[in-house]
Length: 83
Image 1: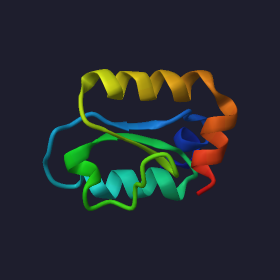
Image 2: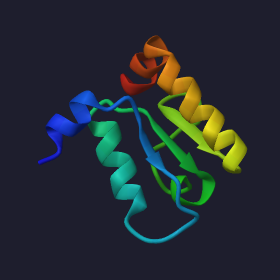
Image 3: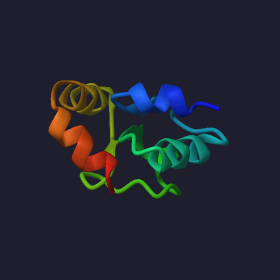
Image 4: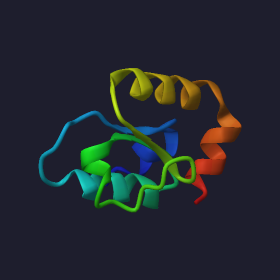
């Protein structure tokens, strides 16, 4: 049970380029009200919508920028996590 971990998480990240099972991790974080930062391929079949409940990034630069933005902005985290 990761409920306590999610309760204190500022965000969930999915920094992989592909693979199986990642969509489950994205959906699980979202179900706990945690915004997600993911690269395009694992986000493709997930419920993640860029700018609405997290960020979908094309490259390492945009991924890092999205993580920093969420780290620094509690109101943005709350808004994205509530969707």
